[in-house]
Image 1 (cartoon, rainbow, N blue to C red):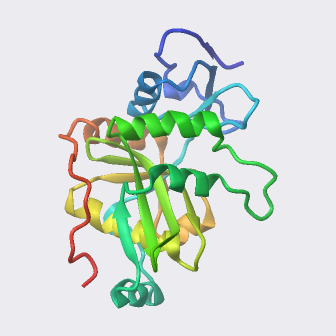
Image 2 (image 1 turned 120 degrees about the horizontal axis):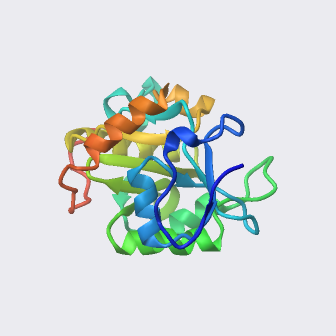
Amino acid sequence: MIPLLRQDVSFPQVDQALLSPNGLLAAGGDLSSTRLLEAYRHGIFPWFSEGEPILWWSPDPRMVLFPKEFNISHSLRKILRNGRHVVRFDSAFEQVMRACAAPREGQSGTWIHEEMIAAYCELHRMGYAHSVETWLDGKLVGGLYGMALGRMFYGESMFSRRTDASKIALAHLAAQLTRWNFGMIDCQMNTPHLASLGAREIPRKEFIARLQDLINYTPVTDWRFDDDLYT
């Protein structure tokens, strides 16, 4: 059995999460900004399908990308240097979320439904949630979105409409976060795609310890890319 959350925004200790399914910690509650921020501060995130109770997770181990360890292939580096793509922060946050929510091959549904979109758009308005967008010839062709607290970034989802468009966004994010001394990008779950980009698993205990240090740094308020990241 897992705890059922009610009015109180506090969460159980993450070491109480189930082993199977890995990391399931609690159910219920709401997606208010107060509760979501409390969750992220403790290494917890929501993940559930539309029509289901809200489910809260803290898996062990945790997939993370240390920004300095982002793996840039030779072909991706050539794309980054050719200057055709424009990469921006926060110019199309809701568009990015809705693109991430679009049906994908082999999937019957999405966990990024209207309730989630509304909740994260509110966090975006508050300055906590951010999008990274890849533009080509004036069109949005890829990107990602996530949360930032202090010097910690929590990746949520990404999408591509052109080859490598989400990789371009993530490469720029990793490079800029390195300059800002961010310590980790949370990737939540292990996938071969993330591993190929340099992400790796660490024990939840280590993740939480690093997290508790990083979230206490002064937050970045001017989310703009440096012009010379890949020149």
